[in-house]
Length: 256
Image (tube, rainbow, N blue to C red; front, side, top):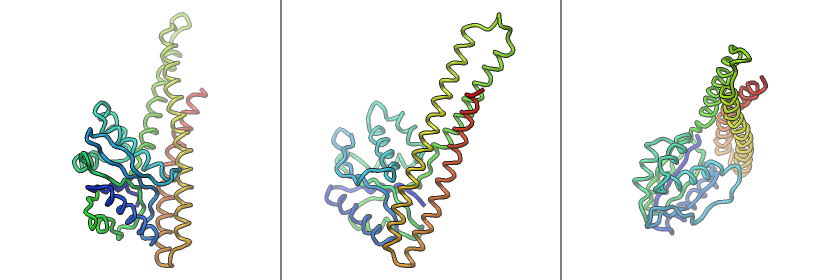
């Protein structure tokens, strides 16, 4: 399963050791680390980045989570960013992060893939850290699919109203409503297309990381990694299917 891990420490030194602990588990093959970022919450409550792993498509999830958390801790935009984060994590998880990551604390933010038998908590707690974990359920594809359906229905309603009117009665207001509905649907179509592209890139990058890890693993561990690869393919295939459906639905509606 893929999950987000936030390990919270009192100082930067132990946060760095927390990254090393995750890297050791990755090297052993017992879990796969896709990306890590170390942050500190300063006296004003804002998050600052202290260290991060190499960026790329495989780290898109942890980067998105970081961006949302930076916004969440911002005094003015917290509500907006909480809504943004709900596409991947629960309110309960966010409440735990806000409660535990107080000013002057440091945190390791990571996305990992692991079997249920692999413990992350023990090595982190041995360093004095607190572990918060949340399964990564990317609901953005569901949300995009739902919104495309809503925008498509809206456009169809306006067009049906136009078809029912005589030429003399069709006014500029109705035409403007149709144009606006088309523009909203076009934006959603572009969002679906971009997310589909990003999802494919993320899948390829993560599978490459898993394949590289499997090549160095012993036979029993290699079998675990291959199961993770199968789970990842299924998860991202389901997401791609929803996004492809949303894109095609929007494209067809805009053609007619």
